[in-house]
Amino acid sequence: MGRDFASVGVVGLGTMGAGIVEVFARSGVDVVAVEISDAALDLGRANLDRSTDRAVAKGRLDPADRDELLGRVHFAVGLDALHAVDLVVEAVPERLEVKRQLFAELDRICRPEAILATNTSSLSVTEIAVATGRPDRVVGVHFFNPAPVMKLVEVIRTVVTSAEVVADVEGLCARLGKVGVTVADRAGFIANALLFGYLNQAVAMIEAGYATREDVDLAMRLGAGLPMGPFALLDLIGLDTAYQILDTMYRRGGRNRRHAPVPLLRQMVTAGLLGRKTGRGFYTYERPGSPVVVADDATPDPVDGSAADGVPPVARIAIVGSDARATGLATACTEAGHEVVTVAGEPTALTPLADVDLVIEAVAGEPRDRAALLAALAGVCKPEAVLVTTAATPVIDLAMATGRPADVVGLHLHEPTRAGAFAEIVRTVRSSARAVAAVRALCAALGRSVVVCGDRAGLVVDALVVGYLNDAVRMLEANYASVDDIDNAMKLGCGYPTGPFELLDTIGLDVALTVASELHREQREPGLAPAPLLEHLVIAGHLGRRTGRGFREH
Image (cartoon, rainbow, N blue to C red; front, side):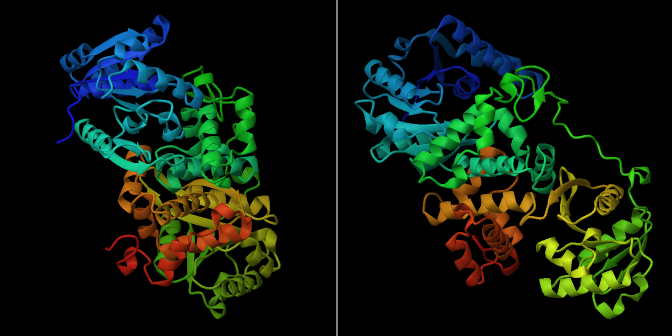
């Protein structure tokens, strides 16, 4: 049976610290909540009051329980108030020298048997522990924001943390109603190591002008089903915090370029554009601390899909293909009010398409076969017809095979998520504005939100998702954490709808490997090279749900 923690201390009562206080007090634990000054203490008390009042207003907490919870919290200025507690959790700013100095003081003040815990999200727990005379009783206890809501706690053991301390903290997590995932002391642990590589890649996308911040956020919410887009999330986290986490992981984690902060991020931090807390980050907010986004100079003008703006009229549409995807697309276009012609994918069957306004190639096949089909379509269709390919291969290769590349546009239709239906439109360097506008108007008629992006491997959604999935496979390959622990970390700590291995088994390991290979071939970025474990599983025929075995058996 684990140790019974009768009282705990929490140092630092910002949003995270006040949330941790609430978690303990909700579970019947007496809490000593400490700050460095009366003013800071008042702010911390206000943070706790706001959070509990909000929980009462939403029906998540009874008023009587709220009063009982607050009665378990003793507020104090100065560390001396922690002399009798069983456990201390610090939630002070993410700077190593600050935490080391704090732990040296806690070591002097707290009882010898007390456990000292850090809520660091990326710093070395070992380097913090050795500032004390009891490194075996120092552990990482990483809560996620907002602490009262998020179920995950990462428990970080160092090479000298005693097994008894780890077991006691794991038991405490269970008492708090949290899911504890225990891992070794490594930069970023599980969740941040995977999350921030993805966020950094998203920043690189807009730095390169590949897509807008709005489009990337929309793509990841609708195309990947994530609760927030990367730029809205970065603004919530704080760009300075994100930069510190990435920089720490880069320096401590083997200098993986996936974690090397993109220059744009550093520039924004230097300029004081830190996100919601300053009122401006990737987005502009109505005031510091507000979640309400207001228009700014970078907000794109809405696109009107009317013919008056130069969009060619699209009345008659052809769907080339005979599988379920092609049939579904034909049905959707018909329901949207278009006259639809359907033909199989053989070049000899294309004669009925001579007078269509737009043709969508939706066949399965090798790039060479698709190029031949599009070339045949270009020869049959009228000069002003728009040619659309659903191929995942570079669209420009297919476009050039037609002899009329200005008329060729790529289209990737995603399966609708709970957030809505979504499509990515691929604009090559030769695509005309009129062709892109025609496809955009079609997507609007189909009720799909749209992102227009350049002709790059993975487009927006698959490039960001597969990069993240590949990182997860590398983490598993290194024996850092199990499949279940990694999936739990991303679902419970980051609010993702599925864990990375659940998602890999669903989409197919071979599909992920193909996209990862294309990303690496195109960008030559070492961090994007497919994980050997992923390649080996595909070779062994472990492709996911459709074969009954992937990272799990199905």
